Length: 363
Image 1 (cartoon, rainbow, N blue to C red):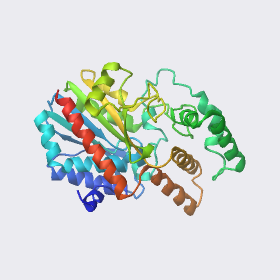
Image 2: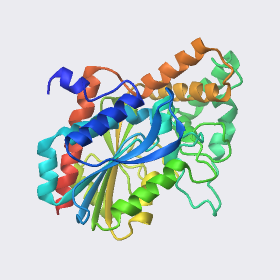
Image 3: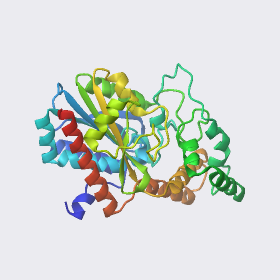
Image 4: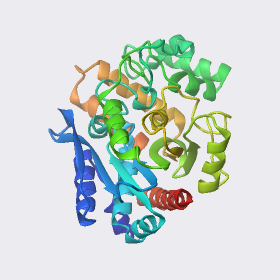
């Protein structure tokens, strides 16, 4: 595939990505089921979680490919989805294997459009899957540093910067990352907030899983993410319950280098309220196997500082346009490396993982 062909798969805005996805589906003669979001996008465009099923309704194997769980991360997954819809060889492989491929484009279309990682409720979708009638987890580590993460001013004062540096020097960068990112439910204007109610995206995704996933015997899922690890490397993070049999299946499908939050081998901290737990709840009849395909962009300190700045901006809408634009650009650059080399790496690894999943589901 030429450089121009690779570039044509990726986009510069949510509206462009959605238009390309719908056009690719129509080119493949597939229907698009659009779940329209209640709000509008950054440019006044319609927002939606768009669903395309490529395969029969009674397929015994279903592979979910999803993008934009974390909004601004959607550029990556969207490009891979568009490529796979245009890939006649991949589609023939899935058909021969009896596997239906379910594309979910724009899990969090609001964040995709507005260059935010969160939903319009300021919720991290991948911390929002809870039984909210039960007590929520309490992240005491986040409580300790909440005042440092989203300070009164941006850039942070020298005092705040020194306190952050001291924390990292004393406890280490992994402890800083874990305290911030594992999920919290006490600071609604903070980072990685899991919410106190199901978000629109959570409820909509559950309906999609009920409609599309309750007739299969085997369910696979690749959820595309960015922001952790070395630039361009797609880490395959185990995305199931802490279950030895599921981990063995994942390694059989995607190779021995599968990492896990349960044993500390992943670049991700151990999380709560994870999205893919809905597969067990909404498709209980299916044997489920999934990964998050996490592509590195910039160093973790830069990613976290971009998130801190973006949350500060969200809390201070009165700030003038120049500073707001700079913060937003930094946010997008932290989760989308807009270079030909990075996009090619994303595409090659994404297509490989999808083909491997189809082979696994065939069994």
